[in-house]
Amino acid sequence: MILTAKFWRFFVSVFIFLFAFQALSAAPLGYFRVEQRNGIWWLIDPEGRPTLSIGVDQIAYEPDAIRGTGPIPYRLAVEKIFPDRNTWGLATLARLRLWGFNSIGAWSDSELWDRGVPYTIILDIAASAGAEWERGLPVDVFAPRFEKTAGRIAGEMSAPRASDHNLVGYFSDNELRWGSDWRGKESMLEMYLKLPAGAPGRGKAVEFVRERYGGDIGRLNEAWKTNAASFGDASPAAETEAYKADADRFLEKVASRYFEVCARAIRRADPNHLYLGARFAGRVPDAVVRAAHNIDVVSVNIYSLDPRPLVAHMAQLSGRPVLIGEFAFRAEDSGLPNTKGAGPKVGDQRARAKAYADFVNWLGSRPEVVGYHWFKWTDEPREGRFDGENSNYGLVDINDRPYQEFVEAVKSANAAAIEVHEKAAPKPPHMSLQLPALLSREVEGLAEAMP
Image (cartoon, rainbow, N blue to C red):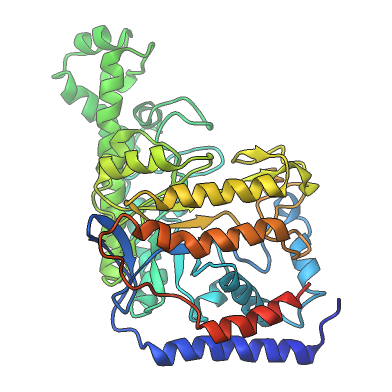
């Protein structure tokens, strides 16, 4: 179906009217915050009304290039559908609203931030100061470069948006390595002891070990079952209980420093918005969660069928509400390889739809939850993105066509999410971020005409 420029102009005008109507009918008075009411956590909107952040990651016109440097299949497709990038953005946000989403997730196009839709920003502080996600290299949080980078990024990205009422808050990073995971088995203490001579982090690690054993290298060797000649040469030869305890204590020091520096930089530049944590990659060591006392919300990426056990664990350790930064399910009937990437694989889009509905319903039953963000808007190239991922993550395929059966289930689950969540509260609050019914039907008719 070929849509005319006249149709798109009409579509865009309706979208602009829709959000202009919302802005005029409810001028914001404050900023997003989190609050516990009647024993249940909520994201509180600028009008003071409880809601959930229901978002999508990487809403992007140019998402994944083939192998990181090749063509961008999604862009090539949407260039043939929409007259320009701006129209694509407005149409995409309208479709997301119709499917029950109310927030823009991480890695989305910054042009979308000024469209009247609540949004989040990922700052990549550690990633800009030396950490490497793919190889799992940690940042040296004790190095001056880390604190300077945090201040610079917050000044550039947070300060200009400090008065934006549509901004929900900031993620400082994504899936940093905190110890043993799929990228390596070393603890943070071992990685810091292996930093180059003269690195501040290595100095802190050596100082930590020396103080733990009162300057007695013999005590360390006995505890760690090693034969180090000095504390500077210390390296565990076996996973003794003493070493594990030392590694856990040092990890908490590193994590405390990380969250302290990030929180200070963000709040100095922007005291109005939420610090949404660092998007943990599933279950990280408890020491890290305990150390994150400077955050407003614990963000965690959960690639499992049932999020409840991990959500409860994170909330109990931190005492903070929880936001799911990523979750996804991949269908084998999508035509994509699905050979690389996180998340459960299911047989088809019907099973994918059920997995989404179950996940959201189970999640909503937890009083600690303040939102969830789906990973992501469109599929990855079948040839693989920069790291080889080639999976069916999208609400739409690489040609911008929705997986209709899946999207219908997504729409229903999202529509029921707030009602599910409010059942834990004795007095259900009035909800926000809902489209006016008449305008919803009008835009829905337009959306149904889209390819």
